[in-house]
Length: 186
Image (cartoon, rainbow, N blue to C red):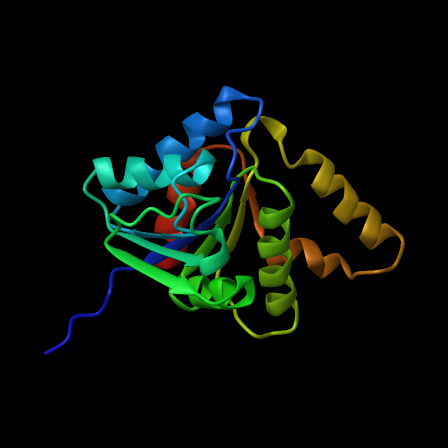
């Protein structure tokens, strides 16, 4: 008799630490918080930057980890092979698909172009009605404020409906995020 995997949260975040130490602390708090809530971490399988921090914190709190990395990033992102599950894909597109398919919710921490790519693909899929998984933007220290202003500009200029802002939730700290996850995934 097979057992269902635990509820899982996909975390998109930087492969660097960023300039503000609050980003690193948030990644650590999130990893520990996911494990404490019995939620499995699904992420990009890197052992660098915020990615590595969230995974190490999840593992330190005895949580489950599911990492997905494309073969061409194994060295650059230092593929973290001591995860509960470690999947190597052929390319970035397959990576995003596997991460998404193995998650019940999606969280984006501070990050760069890769994190934005992942976030916008998930938002586009949701806008097109391809999924209804909850999506959260963890706005640590106001990191995402310029992005939120850009989205408001896109709406004001007529390139998206007001409903664009309904596709995700903005959360300012890890405790609030964990509370929303508990509520939305129950």
